[in-house]
Image (tube, rainbow, N blue to C red; front, side, top):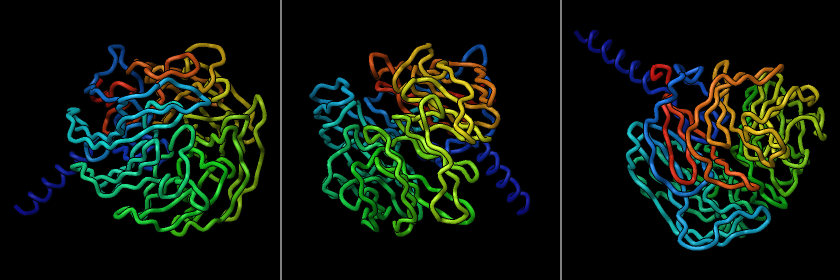
Length: 442
């Protein structure tokens, strides 16, 4: 009898886990590498389209959603006054509130919201940029003006809050604080700014500073990245001046290599495959390195030049099987190139703007799923494609939401999607939507 009961509980638990799928608790997923590891998702969109599980109204922002424990977390900005129009080279002063929302992942019911007053003085002032990070029962949210907030994930109660620009006596970057915080070993790793404090580590429970490191002309916008290989761990930080490796526990520097994109726009996270690392930004700034066996500086293999490689901005590329695929911010096309020498294999505008012709900052958010790639386009479409060294093959496409932002005269949606528990969750400046992408839901 006891054995039967235990077996029944085990079967129930396994079934529950299979149904539950995989969470997406931070930017780029559970391992922050853009790989979708969940099983049982669609490999093509059925002719009848996809089922919308729910849509809920929210306000402006570029921050993507995070999903954990059957809850969806997203941030936005409610403007009460000021001119919200975009100016690539000028700041806009707005008065309003930043908010963190928590929705039920299945029904879309709003479970709680946390709001605080926040005055903006940034360019492209729609709202927060950084995807929240969920870890150890808390939500870590970084606002566009450097307000770092830690909330209880269940009820939204405030654990602690810190103004990075006030604490570290620095100015908000012109395009706002944008790098999603990284949580490792009880530490919140975030870009802060100021002399000697470009990156800081704070205690997850209390917000107390544990270490600070690096100085730079600007902090940049690149997410902190944990590199784990050969039994070692390194924290990769790309400032506006250098690509750096630090010790995650202490902040001590392993190496620093010059790599300066234009306008301080280090945005896309460095991507690694095997022994190779690629980092790129606007202005033909790109470099392929070979990593050392330990923590010694990597070897530069080649640097970017016009009409080779790709130069990322809003969207981090993918690096797989000796190829790099992603959106080139200068031309606006989606590009494939060979890692060994940077030679371009092909390019297309289909997954970015959908129209031929140069489009500055053309954007496509690409994630790998088994032998397919899920792409969310700046036009608000969900695309399933196959990417190979030979060509781009679009399998199917579904329009999810309207592009409500503006960039160089065209409408765009620039928010990273989340793929969790059989759903695609994404937002624009008006709504957040959950779409059923489970194979069983076809």
